[in-house]
Amino acid sequence: MAGKQVYEMELDGRVHRVETSVGDGWKNSATWWVDGEEVATRTSASEDNLYLVAAKEHELADSIGAVRARFTSMSKPVRATWFEGSRSAAEMAARVGTGGIDLVPEPGSPAALREERARANPHLYAARHVAGGVAKVVVPIIITALMIWLAGRIPWPDWDLPSIDLPSVPWPSIDLPSLPWSGWEAPGWVRWVADTAKYVVPILIGLALARSEVRRRRQQDELRERRAAGGPSAPVVSSVDDAGERRADDER
Image (spheres, rainbow, N blue to C red):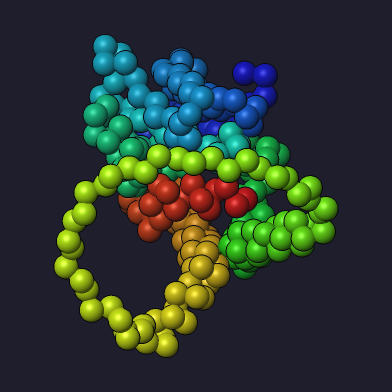
């Protein structure tokens, strides 16, 4: 890989290392090593998640788990997460997103700096996600207003287009029952919710995703500390689904 992001961590006496491509915009690549031996590699031009598992015939296939490498829609690597268990169970956990421990990004790398910023100022980290939600609401409004303003000031030519007589199509007449809609009007609160939801919902989603990601980061740090001390690991269950995680990652 020309540019790469490295994640590494010792787990259960084995050193896991994952190298991912870094934002070339065309494809995502990830390679997984265990104790210096290449175990699996994946490349995709369309997937934001690459799932790495050992080949079935590999002698460690049922003991070294699986890895999920996550990227943003702009091909920026976000994290590499290891899932323990047998080959099939670990791959299933990786695809579902339950449990798992994030490998440690290489010191000084963009991923490491992003983690440090999130730890140092979680409130600012959350505010960035909320700002992203606000931008998604405000920017389209500004662009639309600007286009309307420009359209009203362009001296469009007055085209004299020819009139074309199209043949009439004898469509069959179908008598449908009439619905008693006349005179019905939605309550005021329903109209208010409909009018404001498109502005408020993206902001609320950004806030929820940010809070969930900060909580997930805290849980991952605790899990890494237990692992480093030789203690048992506990599943880290995130309340953010894959679509939500991808949306949060894209706002970083």
